[in-house]
Length: 466
Image 1 (cartoon, rainbow, N blue to C red):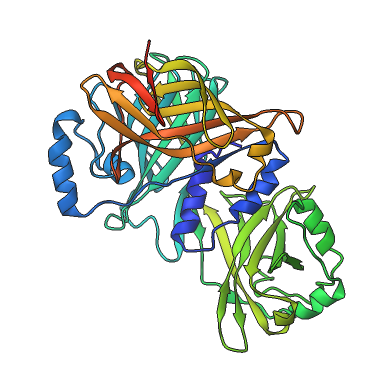
Image 2 (cartoon, helix red, strand yellow):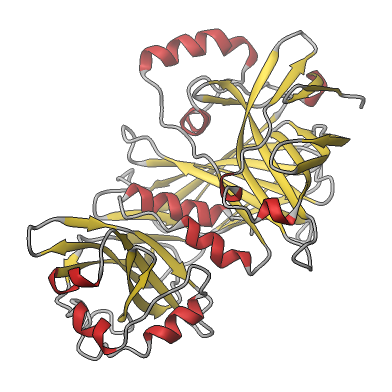
């Protein structure tokens, strides 16, 4: 499953407000049934210290564009972007009280990357301890249609020293060359996610569990979990904000391996204008200790409902009489009644593709190498047994280094990988691993493919023949 820029942006917003992370292992189990997924491996870094930044900028100034603050905020103070790669757009539009500026684009013969920023018209803070400002989903149209866009990824970041601006980077993969054709970037409406402090919920967890003990299996879907929990008696479980949010209800208590699982059920969350909640923590009345767990959203409950389950390791049924849930509510309200549309065009720069036949660790057989100004992609297959092994969810791709015509080497770092299963359980699994070029340990670079003479994958050097 490809994560959209909106998905990544929502996840980042939740991390900024310090709520528990979703249970990634649970998400993998959920998506296994859908036969494909994409897992982000790394997020953008914060800004470096001023002294280090000054040194890096001195070293790279000759090779880089006069960069706006967005490039440095997103990719580090040492970011390198050759002048021939970028197309300055600099279109600014205001909707309601929110202003979006589309700053720069990189157009290749198979992708489009854009950088843009968000501000309030009055320059007030976009994020505080009490709320987070969000932008809607993005899409890229080629000559007025989305048909050519096959996938998208993105990220966003903001500098705590400039709370009135947030920067975004979205990259779109296309099925045809977008060079010199009309490109339209559509950005969904803005909304505000309010996140007040968690509140206590006086729920008799022991009585609910005793009414019908439930034990989940790791592979259980959301529909299976919800069906099991519905056999419990939760009629006496009144949530602290039931009057304001009557559709959010306590769903039940279950065991899974060595963890207690507490769940809420609610309508599918509308990120633009809706509400949700999660069990953020448990307070132990015996000693006041707080337990923080991991949270996973199950959306395949067979209706318009979703199950929000929080898992707390190291607790057992014997602890239930002494545990008090803390409920964290999230409410989104629209800030604008419409989104933003920007139209631009640019000539495309070249992407290189080369056939491979290379065996790597973890049963990987690589069959294609793609070198783009934005990064490198390796594609191939993996045996079904290796893909389903216990270590498959922490797949580390091979080490990839670029060799340039001036004799220098460029290091890369894997930032995402995807896996698509075949129609049968024993069919080879298609693997794709994406890499970013590194300017240094904390900064990213972009480069023209014409300067690449070879690519080293682990110990194998592959000359570029195109």
